[in-house]
Every structure is written in C-alpha cells, then in structure tokens.
Image (cartoon, rainbow, N blue to C red; front, side):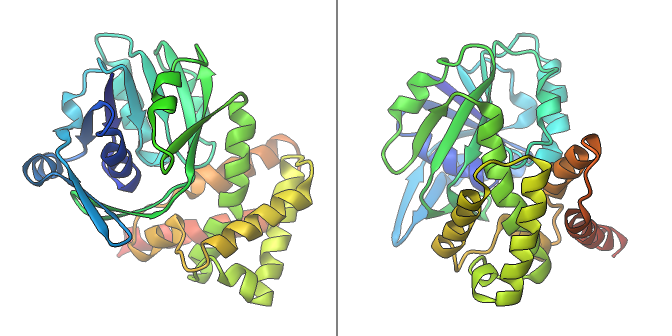
Length: 299
C-alpha cells in the first residue's frame, strides 16, 4: 500500500516515521529545503532515550499527484485551503483522504472535495518537531478515525497494520468523535495559551481551575453536551496525565505562529450564533488569542 502524507510538521513527521515500517511512504513538504533535508539525512524519530532513522522519500507538495492508496493531510486547519485547491486541480480523483486537523471548522471545506472516500481523524499523540527532519514522540495515544464520506471500511487495512504504540481506532460517528476532541481543546488550549502555563496548572491553581470550569459550562451549553460532568473529569484526567506539557496553542503563541483558534473557539462561536446562545467567555478568549496574532503581524 502506498501512503502519502501532506504536511511535515510534528504530526506529519510522526506519522511518516511509524508508517514507514509497514508501507511505502512519501511525505510532501511545503519547502524544497525540507524535502532535501529528509532525503539526505533521513527522518529521525526520538522517543525517550532512543532514536530511530527512517529513509522516507520526501518531495515538495507541488509534486503530489494524488495517486497513493491513502493520503493523510496533516497540515494545520488554516493551511487547508491551499491543499483543497490542490486536490481540486488533480487530474484524477484521489482514493482515500484522511484529514488530521484540530477543531471542526474544516468540515465545511470537506463537503466540496472530490474523492472516493474522505475520513477525518482525531490525534491523541504528543509530538514536537525538533528540526526539519527530526520529531520527538513525547506522548503515546491513539488516532481515532471515522468516515466523512464514502466507504467506512476503506482504511481498515491501514488501521489493523499499526503497532500497539501507534494504534488507529475506527469510529462510527465522525461528528461525535471530533466534538469530543474539540471540547478538550476548547478548554486546555486557549487557557494555557493566554495564561502561558503548562496543562497541570489548570488544576493546581484554584483560580485557573475555576476559569476552566466556567469555560467548560459555556461550551457544554452551546453543544448541548450530555453527561457533562464525565466530560469535564476526562479533561481533568488529561491535564493530570500531561501536567508538564505545553499545549500546541501555547507553543504557537510562544513561537509567534498563527494558532488554530478559529477552528476551535471560532467554530463554537458560530454554533452559538446559529442557536441564539451567548458565549462571553469563549468570545473573550477568542479575541485575546486573535489579539496576540494581530500583534505579531504589526511587529
């Protein structure tokens, strides 16, 4: 089976490193320089005290022609428009596309994509891109996938081939699957990004904990969440398990990079407006993160 991976950030590099042992993998990069670096020196995976090099084939995204059996799109949500345009310009209809983005703001884009089968995924691994050809796997999890359009069994061969430390679980309902991850991201990411604290501080600091509870109550009301207390306890569990971790949004803020706030809180604000609900805390956090992005552009 041939696998294409579009996007050579932390998640793209992580997937290429693991899938290389089981499939023919090509990773497509934004720049020629990164593709050359991977082709020349290999893709380095760091995990705990161990290191592994995989000589994954790499090309710039301009060379992608959509012929792989499965293409994994691992770019940020705000980078998707360019990828979708590329898909629409292909000479063929791609077979299987798997989109791995945070939030749910990208779902409306997927409705217009020509493809035999489209899947969405929720990534629970912790990964950090060290340099152009090195990724650190700093937290084992699973990848949850569900069909958005087409044959729900089309990724079964891929899902069943992966090892126990890089599992892919198939789910029936893509909306519920993504909503579950969205709720987690909506609490942890913006709060840690604005407060500039590690995940565990949301539990350890009583004032941050109160802010998290209030934000969660607002999110739960917007999405009509059932069994809300169980969901909040899971968020607390994740904060405990990743107490020393810095969220992806915090890392983006620290690096003066664009965040995925539109895909997460932006989506919730649209849902609140659509259903005539108030969302003052969500709106405030959204504006604060967007304000930081605006500040970088003015520098």
